[in-house]
Length: 116
Image 1: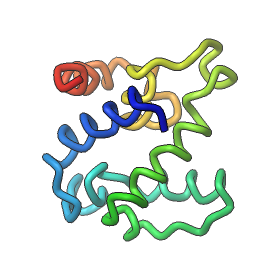
Image 2: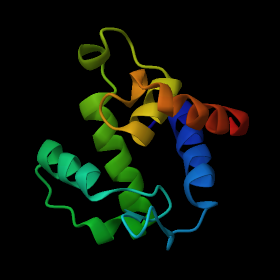
Image 3: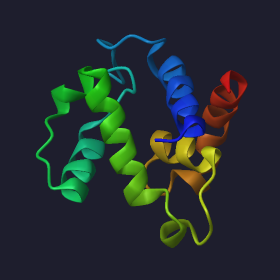
């Protein structure tokens, strides 16, 4: 992972959980420092061939690995029709595969951008 993306991940962790690896949010549906949902884990498992469990999102290193795999799947030139930006990645993390084009993910990006 390059330095720019690592800084993005650190900002996401602050926005999502204030750095708490044991965070549970979204009415018990989002786990860990990156507040990963079950569908995100399923996508990651499908893409990687690794059978991740949702509970593994409580492990910071594994959560970051899941983020990387998710971005490899959705934050791509093929998926976006152009090179992905940090904004695209943050909005995909927040809003799913098409989060980069959802109006609802713009305020999330603004929070992340302030920390970069």
